[in-house]
Length: 148
Length: 382
Image 1 (spheres, rainbow over the protein chains, first blue to last red):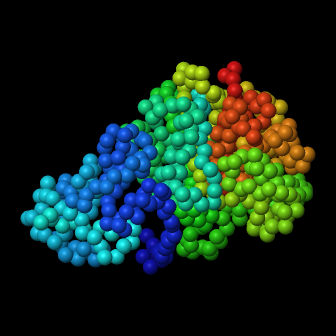
Image 2: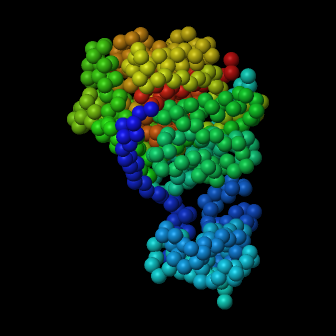
Image 3: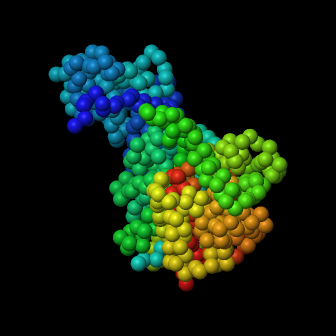
């Protein structure tokens, strides 16, 4: 066995820059967020995917029929975060939740806050709260809160 | 073994930056074109085989899952292939093997690269500890092999310029090609900067975004469709630094070619193959592969290039589409060779069609010229 101090270790930082092209459909979805609108896509079967999907996983067709959904919806499931860590976007207790927006057939992942854990149930109604800063990204929806 | 044929080839427009589409939109563009050409619906696809070069190039790990919706793979068997630059070819071989196995009737296969999402040339040159940062890129890696070829056979420097011109003139006949350089000539090429001595700028392939897809089906389902029958296919590899390795004329390339010629009953490739799409990312690889693949003897490749044998109307046309020299979406580049070979024997190569092409070869290589994939396609089964 070699002495521990003879075993070399060196830092290796693998850092690399990327860009993402959103394409025509998802660009519309992100641009709509700037206007406080949430878009889904409707397939030929009538099913509405929200957030918008570029391709239907069931029929495999390209989707282009955009429809507005929400801003209200129903919690389908959730996980409560009592003590948010530094990397969480919300510093107060909150839940990650799967939210089926009104008019949609699928759910989207977002955050629900300004409530107690005991207030949340599968089936609770929530509504979108919008961020003051617009960045054309999903966090333009700041979080969801329980419908008054 | 089940006999298999290509019934649809689909390609995207190749360009430096396809900012108009997402990664999913890019692969779907090729798939839509392939399925339209094959006259086939999603229900008929039994499995999806996706190939691309390293995940580092776009920063998407497990792209076959990231792109599952786009490639129509949800609910179907899916497989991802990666064999460096040869991946477009080996993905085609693996897709065809699925059909030949009898377990899958019709397979969709797609390959892509979206180089504009990052900069692939340098993605494989991270700053490793304990080593200097060479940052050579593929051209820097191959330049010494090319230098050795030139030394070994006393080849004149204009051979490289000639290939660069010929492939780009062919590209002018292919609307999908990335590079369209009207008026290109040897002077224009030789006036461009030296990138990796002895390779000049215009002797190198571009960085492209693009995708290529094929639909491969079994003999009993071909029906009245146009088809390119797969008469021989193989992959071979050798170690990057194995002892006694000849990087100029790799044994794996020799063996892979011999395998597909034997399968297809070809004894004289120069006479019996009507045209070929061969992976030539840097000009000098045309004469090098002419020799490695047995189209001529050692030291004779550059002479064939010099007498225009590889021109579209020559005795042994190479890269009628413009080749890798004109479009290089890395992961797709091998499949474009395979698909273009299929289009030739189907008589569907439009303005870059070789007259009466009946037997064509597709070829891809990758890594340190160590991974090979090849196939022979024919207009007839016999």
